[in-house]
Image (tube, rainbow, N blue to C red; front, side, top):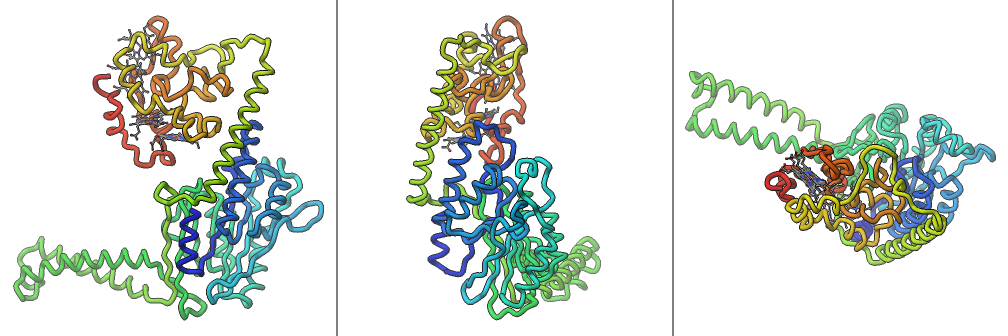
Length: 475
Ligand code: HEC
Ligand code: HEC
Ligand code: HEC
Ligand code: HEC
């Protein structure tokens, strides 16, 4: 991301880099154990975005996972403004963060304002009793009325979710762009309501949304044209024309409608094509205007080069996390000293539990050999290599039984649970390994998808994958 933004800035100074919240977490429901690591991660995110030159940020409800004091501290540390016009500190009755940023971009004067939804759960308010949220729509309306005369373009960072963004566009005229968040909606093609362009890019930082806006010689009210919609129609027009040309060719210089008058099938098809072309042409007439926009998603995958400086931040973070988890482990070991560790350290009592591949090996030599060759058998090593084996969010898919009944939670109890093993697919085997106990034979596709999900393995193809681990046939 850093290198992408840098390149864009070098090419064309007129860019704004914005975020509408839920940067630091994706829920409120974190154990205290996980929260400890989260602060380090949150520091890393803030520091990196600062380095990348984020222009403005509106905190979302999940950003309060570490408390308002944490956010206030960060807002003072970083160079970009935190904006939230309707977020109030109950005690002082003052706004927690800024209202809006006015900035010159190219030769335009742009105002960026931030708002947050007031429709938050009881859980949010009980965890943040000091926060008060004013009506976002009324707040935005007042602000926009003031700003309209002073600036050329108004952007709202709206942490409200898509339905409310639409409502905002309907109710408050004068906002040019709404950058939405909260519902993690993936809007490849922006929604335009009341001359407001609404964008949102999905969740988990998987892609960056890029909205190109061409405002040359434009005057308000803008006549907005989606370049991708226009391109789509032109493509359609091209296909239709090609087929129509075909009829012309066949009719050897005659009017095809006359030439095919006795061939009902062809005639119907031709009439249909001409009608469709008419419709497309009519639609294209509306696509003449002065403000062109184009929305693209930039996947934050391996194709984008890492920035050395930010890599450094990440390395430091990894080292810190290693230290933190090691310290926790040694503390928990100390607590356990003298007490015998019972097998009951496993989660949940009764019922089948996870036993590890060693138990399967002796009776299933052939399957064991197959598995041993697969990458599943090295999955834990991959975490170790990337120095992330202490990170709780990574462990689940690279081990067996993490936080599952019959499995483990404590990292110092990992031992036989490392790697994706037989029981990741066939379920806990404690009963089966003894005598005649049943075990899952048919491994459902959904089992694979628990780990090979869209986020981690977007190209996963079940049939091919089963084939390649040789589990389907001989194994
Ligand atoms: C004491 C030997 C023994 C051990 C240990 C053992 N299995 Fe089996 N397993 C068998 C036998 C025998 C069968 C064949 C049962 C049948 O065909 O009815 C079998 C069948 C299976 C099947 C196919 C299920 C079916 O209904 O045909 C799977 C899957 C399986 N075992 C997985 C495992 C896993 C995973 C482990 C380790 C947790 C394991 N086994 C440990 C003896 C063992
Ligand atoms: C518990 C999580 C988990 C489950 C369940 C799981 N996998 Fe995997 N799989 C992984 C992980 C993690 C890796 C990567 C291991 C590595 O390289 O470190 C992987 C790697 C693979 C690979 C090799 C990588 C590649 O893309 O070529 C294949 C193929 C594969 N899995 C197929 C399957 C199939 C088929 C199933 C279901 C029958 C399945 N997996 C179930 C976690 C899982
Ligand atoms: C939802 C399950 C899931 C979680 C959570 C998960 N992984 Fe994986 N991981 C997979 C699967 C599936 C693969 C194999 C797919 C592939 O190779 O693209 C994989 C492959 C890998 C690989 C080897 C392939 C590569 O890209 O080099 C590494 C390293 C890795 N994961 C690290 C991590 C780290 C670090 C985390 C925590 C931030 C993590 N994983 C969390 C499922 C998961
Ligand atoms: C990534 C998931 C995965 C892992 C890991 C895995 N298996 Fe399997 N296994 C499968 C699938 C898929 C099948 C085929 C089931 C079917 O026919 O629907 C299968 C089939 C089997 C069968 C039945 C074979 C038959 O002839 O019906 C046995 C036995 C078995 N596995 C044992 C094991 C053992 C032992 C291990 C560990 C050494 C292991 N499996 C690891 C997914 C897995």
